[in-house]
Amino acid sequence: MRELHVKTPLIKSDYFSSFLEHNVYLKMESSQVSGSFKIRGIGNLSAKCVENGCKSLIGCSGGNAGIAVAHAAKLLNVSATVFVPETTSQRSIALMKSQGSQVIVKGANYNKALEEAIQESKKPGNALIDAYDHPDIWEGHSTIISEIQEQLNEKPSIVIVPVGGGGLLLGILQGLENAGWTDVPVLAMETLGAHCFNMSVKAGKVIPLENITSIAKTLGARTVPQQLIDSLAKFKIISEVVTDAQAVSSCLHFAANENTVVEPSCGAALASVYCKVLQTLIKDERVHLTDGPAIVIVSGGSGVTLNMLQTWANEMNV
Image (cartoon, rainbow, N blue to C red):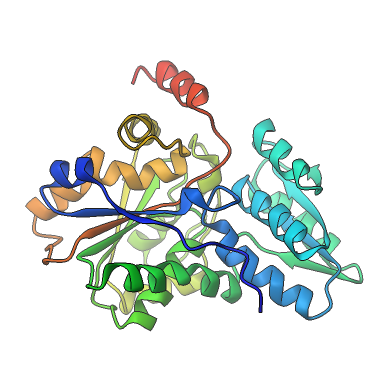
């Protein structure tokens, strides 16, 4: 079956390494053709659907997943319709349309747009391409870890992952299991106002967010899959939350230090080092680093520009 994603660079960051006083590598999913890691899982699911006779992909997204559906449809030579919530940026909508996809704006949040997408997917020849909640999505995302295993040649100390709906995290966990690395801790980072996983971890069960208030709109899912909560017993997952201001500030630092613009959703993971979340966990002995490097999954994101980040920073007095 055809893979729609590319193998992304794993780069040692001298800046992050000096800041943490430990080797830090960046897995640059921002270099995917769609601009984010999403093409891995969505590409995997889309290719399987087309292989089984699907003629049109139906997506639902706050941005990056929809962009990935649009790219997947173009690469697979099928049509696509993407339902997006009202919070989706015009930039993201334009990127989807540039790949030939139809974009329909429905609902105030992801879950409402998903309801509409589900109805459309019931038509003959259509297939629903969920943004994060499907085993084939997780399988696709697991290739991030298989690539890291090949590129790194040693076991990492920790993997740092931004969390929205939980699809990337489930893929990372699947990849760690495939690699025999289930003892490697995972630091799951969210922004306040999109922290449905953190709430669920504390409750020990899936807890839906009432409203998405974070600026990190691509982390804007109200719930995570039950499978993610079930994984807490098997893996060492540490859930932490940062503010929007910390995420945006981290994005600006990253643009200056690494010459790459990413979304605040990705900034949540970057903030683990920039805002000393990981350093505090180490100091409090909740994380013990081994000789292996820390890995930050730079999830990417095509929905922002440097000017947008600077505008948000000014509004937040960052």
